[in-house]
Figure 1 (cartoon, rainbow, N blue to C red):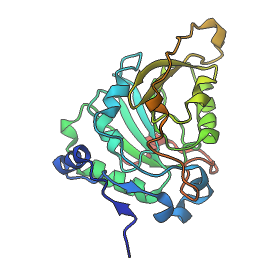
Figure 2 (tube, rainbow, N blue to C red; figure 1 turned 90 degrees about the horizontal axis):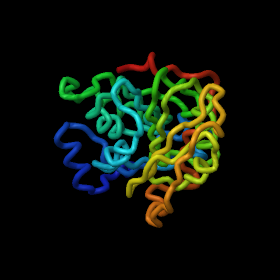
Figure 3 (cartoon, helix red, strand yellow; figure 1 turned 120 degrees about the vertical axis):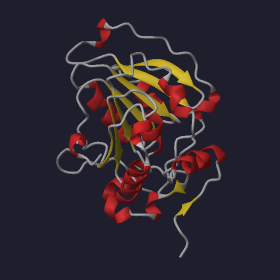
Length: 254
């Protein structure tokens, strides 16, 4: 039987894995892996492909507040590479949310293989959950998306972030094929652009009207930003539809 996982051949990713004794460099269609475990949410999900080494730092450079003391949340964490890239920064906590049980298990194995004494942030955990069910941690947030789902689910995630408590929230969107949903939302303003994606922040929180905040004008995005690196594939898994109840990341295994 042919394995549903195949190595993509990206040398930087392969070196990243080899240096750490982990496995994150792969191209994987969740529909070939564990669609029954994912359930109906598979309709909205995209395939797994790891964040290219270096791309996360390019986006983090545009976060408009200090990273120290902030929680990093990766919605659609896959095998956990973005979590390990984020751990080079002094986040208070790093949480990966992944709907696929198989990918979540691989991500946990990868985190277990790392010597956390070498990391700037040592509190890393993976939550097996739908992105719409997980309870966002308290305090300031940096939320990362590597195009994990389509606009229907993205809109609901945006509403959750916009309606939360007053705090600093940055949204890092790699391969932002659905960016129009963010830019049409009155609670978000554009902060910066990298070749791989865009960064936004919440400007409405806890009843503060958007009109009371100055919005930053966004320059025209490069046309290369519109070419999807990860595309939604019919019949492939989704990370969207809610399951009953919410999941608290603080109870997830470290």
